[in-house]
Length: 386
Image 1 (cartoon, rainbow, N blue to C red):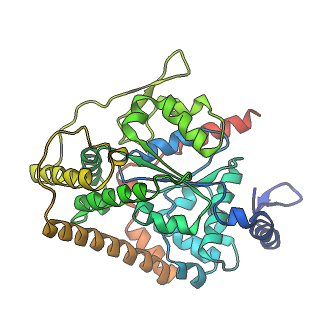
Image 2: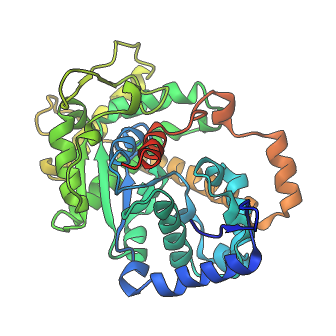
Image 3: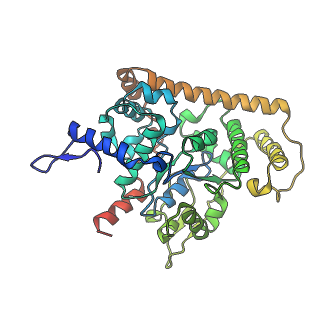
């Protein structure tokens, strides 16, 4: 919709004057004070392997909702937005994670001018939502759980959905994925998940009465998708659509997700439990998980953790163990920030050379190579005039 111009023959092209005018109209006219603060935006947060992709796929089944997937634009430091014009910024973003290509937004690389972080983020979310004829935009990004409070201050009118999953299953799923994706095999990555789970519990405890924050459980989503998605629809302010309970084509939301929706004769589908798989976690780390669960039961209410029904009364982690795990998480965080700095401070020619030499790991692992089925189905609806 945006930036597109047509010549006299009807061919689609990109006229710089038309682009600049349309950019200005969107940035200045459409972004009123409420929208600029995140009104109409939704963020799906949760640990990696906690079900964020499944939830995002189901939410995006609603015709009025179009959330981006791990664009990570809001993870950039504020200086990056003022250092580079928007077109240059988006070129670097696509070299970093290729999400503009995934979302069919490559023409944003031709955008002009500079703007602050919040303005650019709202602009790209709304651009993608408009492309999908949706009213509700935003993003699902597990990376954001580490700074959810800052994200809430940046977008005070946005809504936040946090999905929780049993921490053992999260760590086991992450370990299986790390076997396929080399960049996930960082020292202390599993211990970092425990640290971020605690940050998630703290965030939900502090915002327990905030009407713009919702927590759902992966296990309940799997067991009763219709009831869960009805609550999600109400939270988003949209009418419930039965399509929100059905994964397109009856397939899983990612090749590594073994939960899937069974097609039946009714609109209310069921989710089959995954087949048993060997536990990839070492015994020592499983003992560490048990110690952290003791700590979480002591520090956070059961309505947040859901751990009160678990048996066991061992000891919580020692101060030394907590310090070491937090140090590992901080090392991982600093490493990720250094990678961001590399992509936003290096010359573009160097970044293109680097990406040719080091293609993204999920391409080599065969992950996320197919288009999102929810977007395909949304496109077929538009084509059929529905």
